[in-house]
Each structure stands twice: as C-alpha cells, then as structure tokens.
Image (cartoon, rainbow, N blue to C red; front, top):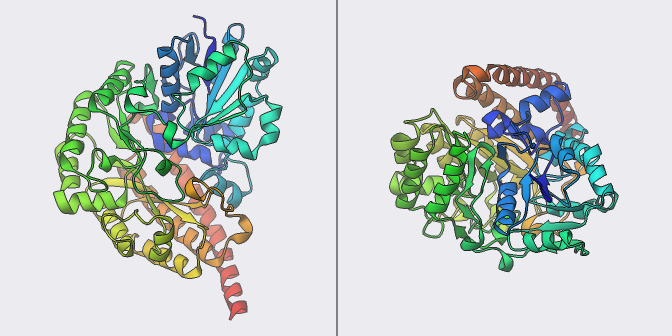
Amino acid sequence: MVFEAVISSDRTMISNHHGREFLGFMTTSPPIGLPEKIWMWLAAPKPKVDKLGRPVEAPYGLRKIEAKLLEEGFNTAIVDPDHIAKHLDTMKVLLIGHHDYFAYGPPSNEWWMIMGKEPINRISFMRFMNSTAVREAKRRGVKIIVGGPAAWQWLWEPGLWKKWGIDTVVEGEAELVIGDLVEAALNGEKLPDYVYVGPSDSPSIDEIPVIKGASVNGLVEIMRGCPRGCKFCSVTLRPLRFIPLDYIRKEIEVNVKAGVKNVILHSEDVLLYHADGVKPLPEPILNLHKMTAGLVPGTLVWSHTSLAAVKYSEEKHRLITRLMNEIILTRQEFLGVEVGIETGSTRLAKIIMPAKAAPYPTEKWPEVVIDAFRIMHENRIIPAATLILGLPKEREDDLVATAELLDELKQYRSLIVPMFFVPMGALKNMDWFRKHRIKEEHIKIMLKILDHSLHWAEDIINNFYLKEPHMYPVRLGIKLLIKYIRFKARQVKPAIEAFLQEREKKNT
C-alpha cells in the first residue's frame, strides 16, 4: 500500500505499555537504578506491527487524525517509528503527535529538575527526530506537521524547530484543519508556521470521526472539555461536548475486533458524562458502564475524574457503590483512575480552581478530598493523584495546609504525584516554577508524598497489580524498582532532614 501521509511518534508514545497505561508514566522520568534499555522495556515495549509497520494499537489522538484524513480520502496510516524507512519512496507528509515532546510538561519537568537528568520521553523523542529515517525524509522534501497536547512546547524550542525543518505546528483540536494542511503539503504549497485552533473553532460532535484502528489499551473518548474552569488547565478552554453512546460503542467495537480486551473511558471527569452541570446523574453513568461491560471482555479503567464528583455522586445517589458492586467488581478486583488534589489550601483553591469543589463550597475543599479518598478506598478504586507545587501566589501557609491534608490521606490507598507548576491554560503567561524557588515546605511535602506513595505502591503491587502469570517479569521489575527507591530514600532522607533542621536553626 502507498502512504503519502505517514503519522508517527517516538517509542514512548507508540507502545501499549504492557497493557497497563500507568506504566507509561515511567517514561516521564530518567531511568532510576536501571539501564535505559530495561527501563524502556518496562515502560514502553515495542508493539505488535503488521508487515507495513502499522501498530495494532496506537495513541488515541493519532487515531483521530488518521480517521479524519482517511474520511477525507487521503492515503494515510500510523506507522511505528522503527518502520518509517519502508515508506520513504511514497511519503510526502510526516505528521507527528506527542503528549510531552521536550519533557516540559508535568511531571516530566519535575523529575528533570530534581534528578538533573533528562527524562526518557525527551531522550526518546530527540532520538526519533535525529533518526536516519526522519532525516532522510526531510532531505527528500517531506513536509513535517506536528501537533497534539504538547504542541505549545515548540514555542520554547525554536532552534530545534528550525534544525529539524518543522513546517507547521498545530495547537488545539485539529480535526477541522488537518485535511487542508495535508492537501496543501501534497500540492507543494507553503504551509503556515503555526496554526492555533481556538475554542470557537473546535469541532462539533458530527465533525469528530470514529477511529478506524485500535487505540492504546482501548482508550475511547466519552466527552471533551471540562466545566470546572481550573486556571492551570488548558482543557477548560475548550467547549464541553458529550460523545453519544453509539459513537462510543463503535470505537469500543473497533478495539475489541483488533484484539484489545480492555477499555479506558477517557474524559477530564468521567462522572460528569451527561451530568447536570457539575452534579453527576446516575442514569447516564450506569448506562455507559453497562454498555461498556457488555462489549469488553477485559478490565475497565477511567482516565480521570474529580474528587467532588466522587463525593457528590456517592452521597446523593450511592452511585460509586452501585457502579463498583453491580458492574465493575463483578469483572475485576479494582478500578484505577487519575484525580487532582492540586492543593490543600482553600485560599489558593479559590484563586486557581474556584469550581474544583463544586457543588460544594471551596472552603470545604480539604473535606471534599478526604471524603472522596475514603469513598474510593472503601470501594476498591485506586487513585493516582496529582498535587501542584509552586502555584502562582502560593504562600507558606498554603503549603502548611497541603502538608496537613497529606497527613489525613495516609490511611487511604493511593499514589500521589507532586508536580511543579507549568504555565498552561489561563495561567500560560505566568513564570515557571524553577529549582531556585524550592522552599523548605516544598521539600517536606515531597518527603511526605514519597513515604505515602512507597507504602501504598507496595500494597498495590502485592495485592492488585500485574498479577497475571505472563506479567511476572514486569511485576518483578517494578517490585525491585520500589525496593531500590526505598533504599535510596533511606540514604538521602537523613541528610535532607539534617539540612532542614540546620536551616530552621539559622532562621530562628
């Protein structure tokens, strides 16, 4: 087959992460205690491909671009980075997408700052762009179009933009512009350097295509946008759209037909699917999960939900209990999801995320977090929670409040990931949180999080995660990694604590 437009990315993106999406987060870190090759095997092993180099599973965002171009009549396909050279004779356009091109997003930038080493995702992407196949494609006049959630990062790398000959950067939802750009590239026309797709230009439901090939780990989108309006998040700038059940069904069927047994329901807040504003409603959520459970033979995962939605849906409708007992726990041992704590300070919450606690008042944010963690713990939902350090207007008392909240969360099974503030969304013009701004309170919080996450990581790996026999080598690798981190932490913590004590004496 002849592909004029090839879609690809580096290995950290083109992988199914052993069927465990969370393992993919390891690519945001430098290798810790392991050689890079082993780290990459644990986090991003090579996928199955056909003879043309097309992976069975590919990132969902790339699948959407592929589907749109196919619907518009272009000869296109997603190709594994190791197989791009097979298409050099026919390729005229190379489209590249990524979640974190240069490791400037969270939590990559935090790992880079703390460890002083480039994260794997940056190393892998640089290697991809400097590969013989990509350089040869450019030498032959191939147009390169890049986009995806991390498109904004190219504005911070004009040197690499020029060095690699990037023709166009597309920021925003690309369904309505990508066909015209590819058509212009194929006709030899000059492409715009930068295309920004604003909220008013976002596609409607009818303009969003159904994927034609399987997505990584069965991810399917159930809604776009978010009504909460957190100022640090770019998703809240997009209009809210609910994907109809028949669209969702079709995409799940595409995945199942390709042999992908699991599903990840993707939204910034799964529990707000067809909600009444920020108040979850039982019927659409139960219908969605009943349909999904009837289609997928494997596990069901949520990408994200909000802690306020967890608390409200359980207290108002007993929805979490019903979902878990009637549907999810009848087929699996737990449910994984990402949630956002961000801060324990009600003062700071009012400034940066005034609707995060809704329908509860922002003054009750710590209570919302604690109650939601308790509800999830009791119902075998395991959250991976983010917490942002260095937010604009952050004060010492805000950090104290966050530390106190972390103490309250000790008893609840979860992983907590600290992230340094990155200027995105409505705060994109603010300054980055940099290494020289790290305070004593930040260090204390990170040590609390380390203790918390190591404790519960051992519990999760021993009782819930990677229990299948064929996953034993990966399970062993993760257990050894946890032991190594705990060992290093025991070595480093006394020195950090002594440093903090000495600093405190000087300050008093």
